[in-house]
Amino acid sequence: MRHHFFRIRDVILPVIDFFYPVFRAVLPLQTFRYLACGGANTLLGLAAYYVSYRYVFKETTFDFGLYALKGHVAALMVSFAITFPVGFFLAKYVVFSDSNLRGRIQLYRYFLICLFNLSLNYIILKILVEKMHIYPLTAQVITILIVILFSYVAQRNFSFRLIENEDKTG
Image 1 (spheres, helix red, strand yellow):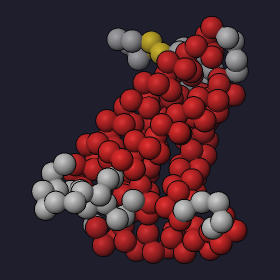
Image 2: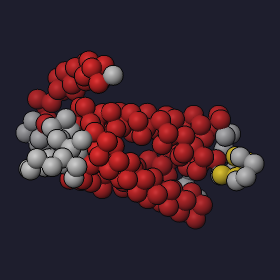
Image 3: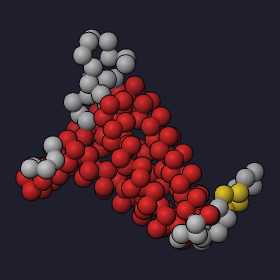
């Protein structure tokens, strides 16, 4: 399975790196790759959010039987379910491939950061939609911009950091 990830990586990296020379003066390569991969994953998440909010949950409350979620919150969960695995793949194999932490440690740490980001996203989204009455898609875009800054620093320095000694358990 790992072999397939590297073949996909070998297709993605040349496409991203093709555009890097334009940004070389202002961004390190890894930051550019993070922005490209994160941007693509963000667009995927926004598309999933929009489609699920608009057409699956029809902008209304979705009743699971035991619990009911407002449409914008249910759409956030759908978006997370799609972008989490895609984002981890891109972070591990494309952006932070130099990390020498074990894969399961990276996944665990990535999951923790994503849960924090999801919680932050949820809180900000609820405030913007339910208190400030901003349209959910617009609120999600605003929220994403806030969460992205924290995410890069946390992923680089926690989930996919380089370790100096031989103990790769972190």
